[in-house]
Amino acid sequence: MLQGLTVYFSSDTLSVAQSLRLPNTHNTKPNRGGLCHVLDLADQHYTLADFEALLPMSDGQRRKPEKPYITPQTVHTVHPGRPLNPTLIEVVIHRLCREYGGYRKENGYVAALCPCGHTHDAPGKHFNFDPTHGIGICFGRHGRILLKDLCTILGIQPTDYGGLFESERKDT
Image (tube, rainbow, N blue to C red; front, top):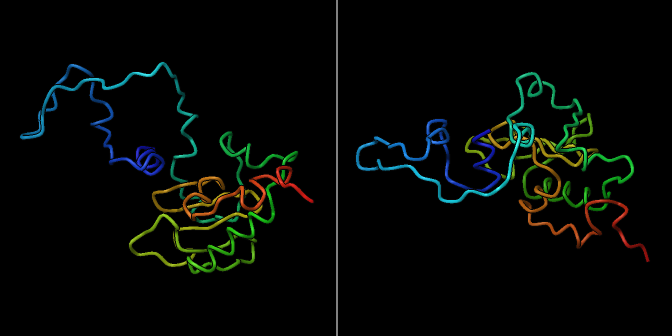
């Protein structure tokens, strides 16, 4: 989850020890130690489930990426009353195929290089895109990537293609 937060917020890595440091305690590392204190305290509360989408997938899911999944965090993307914009999905697929060595698999997924980057990557080795649900799945450290976030990573502006959902498209 800490790795997922690092990627999501484009922040420095955070270890378990750092995340558990309490205010007014001392970091005892030589040359870097000091008194720990709170820099900002927002009046917001979160549950562990709020961060579920940042968790890495289990080994079982890694072996069978073709299995669809729906979590509370992805329900807004997989909404039967609001189907995803097929034009935008095709633009994402085209970009993955053109710039990330992508190809369509028999199960409907698109295997590609992870757009977030891996040192030893090959198409489909670390990343698949599920066009039905609009979710990228990185089997490395990036986890699930929602369509809106994948568009940002790929440099695609959803509004240029009618928005994320089909109902947002303005047919003339």
